[in-house]
Amino acid sequence: MVLPPTVLVNTNNTVSTIGNCLTRTITATVRNAGLLSVFDAAITETLPAGMTYVPGTAEIVTGTGTTPPGAGWTPTGDPTTVGGNAIVWTQSELPALARLYPAQTLWVRFAVRASC
Image 1 (cartoon, rainbow, N blue to C red):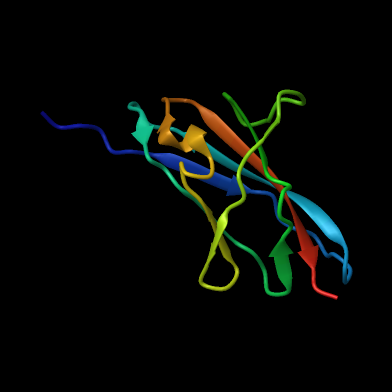
Image 2: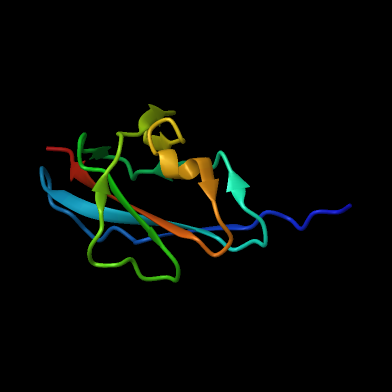
């Protein structure tokens, strides 16, 4: 039996210019575009130099499609930091990553701060 390949689509909003010491909200989108569920997924975001994640700001919402719903966002755990500017969420911090169903989309919204 041959299983179809796993397809995850990850798109990010481009961060526009931000002044020193200011914060900005980023939304990461992860969608299972495959035919089967994806188990134990992870989200890795590499922040630009001079940007840091603001602890306690992460929240998620799930659904389908490409536009996140306006309501239903819930707080989630903070990511771990790896390799300098990379932040990573696994199912330990974000339990919804344990299983992404076909056509399911997961949005993660969080704040970053520019260095002073």
